[in-house]
Image (cartoon, rainbow, N blue to C red):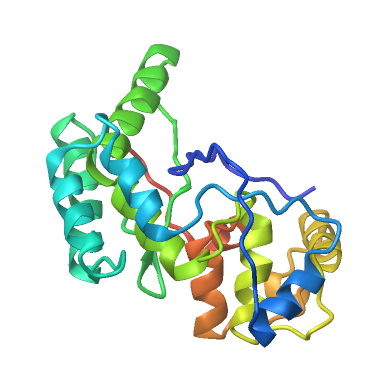
Length: 236
């Protein structure tokens, strides 16, 4: 069985299901691929998502300034603002006495979950590390990251990241029209159970060297990206 390191997820989605109609060819193809799949959504449009983030007191003012500006531009967040929020998160952890986490950029997208080495940490230190990560993520980057990556990789606001990933692959014409969620999950299970040490591109129907595919994977925080990530050693 392929082992996976501890995952620290920056996105926790509480889905509230809404219905949206689709009319484009790509959307229709994607809908066919999702037949029989839970396609619950966590927002109806980007401005509603941003408004809900602005109403939450756990995000600091620097994030809310970015979100307010995005409302004036159809929910679009400039890459510079997105990158600055991530740097603020990294600096927040450095200010708490840890080394800065690696940037782990994939096709320009910052990626967390990330690999974390707990070597040398006591149980108490490990719990504090988890708390500090949560605090820095929430205050400095969570809201900006969610809005930015949702717009980029999940414009239909699917609550299930696997559904969002397959939808993204269809929207960008990276898989055949008849590629379904069931096929993706079969390929994923085969890869995860592989003991030969093969790379993801040996198991999946889409090209892992395609920059658009990498964007879909990273924007939807796919664990398939994790073998490419640098391990963070918070104590150096």
